[in-house]
Image (cartoon, rainbow, N blue to C red; front, side, top):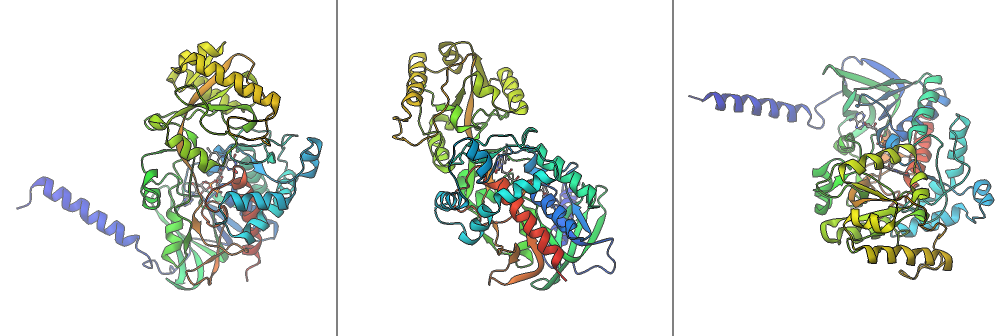
Length: 488
Ligand SMILES: Cc1cc2nc3c(=O)[nH]c(=O)nc-3n(C[C@H](O)[C@H](O)[C@H](O)COP(=O)(O)OP(=O)(O)OC[C@H]3O[C@@H](n4cnc5c(N)ncnc54)[C@H](O)[C@@H]3O)c2cc1C
């Protein structure tokens, strides 16, 4: 006879087996009746999804957006908001020479030539158009561009509203204006195709807040814009075991199940081991304080108070440098100007960090070093040396003459925060063509299925340039929306 524990275990296993079977690919044939229907169904209400939805609606398609979380915005709303685009007007005023070709060349090289040049060409050519399109819906950008961390050049546009809030606020208002219907707490569980590996995509199966199954028909097409898998430890460790225990900068939604659902019906992933990390909470810490947004205004030091990497390096170079430090952690350091240059949300987080021991503030560099637990003499010498490099326009520590050296670290109070490595962006994802149609393993289009944003792969190569993801989601989100609306 089974014990009570045994019976409970049996019941749990039976439920688990049922749950796995219920989610198995191909089980879900088209329903007898659809619960909802629209021309275009968008999965995910982050930046790519909303850009696709608004563009499809501009083309007179009826649009439904399905979002699994209680609130919209995904990683886009918590992003730093930097969007790269060659912009003759803003950059011209600042005396910065640039062009889409220069942006293209830098992006391709920074991704170790692993990105698809055709898509990078489209992305870098359409950046300014994306900025102007967002402005046409009322999004206000700051007058000056800057060089966001890991972006390799001063061409990052930042909205006036903090972080990525401006993009989501603007696009949601535009979506509402165009009659787009957005449903939150509606998790997509399966993409429904005529046959599992054949025919047209017809819609999706979702689960609502109450646990009820909802079938949503896409009369023209489905657009997948469900983001990356930075918050899925198992999936990222499968492709790079070093990534398992790292913290993540991503919101908890970034679990990648829609990418896997697309694979169930024939979609093919590329570049899945290209996983980017950014400075964030070191292992074991919870609060992510950051003071490293603007490359021209901060330095990084190790526990000896010395710089260990050029702050304007590629993100993967900085990742390796930090992962090689004892405790996989260093510090970012700014002065009062550098602190004030961060938007209000980051500034508030730094203030919170003073209480939790993740950030430090002092009126003198010596005092700051003491609070950080680094040798004061070495730290003061490091800052002095760096300031002299700004005067000389030559970062002699790392042999960089052409670096964007515009701000010294001189104005008290001085700030610093812990800088470990957090999983930040997953460059791998679904293979798409330049029309954003999802391709199968033979390179054939899966009819009526589009994808845009971090759920896709092959756009950034091995290393994503900072500020190119918001560009990516706007450019390819719009392309996906327009092409989905044009389907018969
Ligand atoms: C802290 C941080 C700062 C960043 N800063 C910058 C920056 O300054 N510049 C830059 O270029 N890039 C930045 N990035 C990267 C950039 O923000 C993201 O790559 C980009 O926002 C992804 O947009 P997306 O629309 O593809 O996905 P998201 O914005 O993540 O949206 C995906 C949406 O899909 C939903 N979803 C997921 N699964 C399902 C499902 N099963 N059913 C229904 N809905 C689902 C999610 O809940 C989410 O709302 C940053 C990222 C982070 C985390």
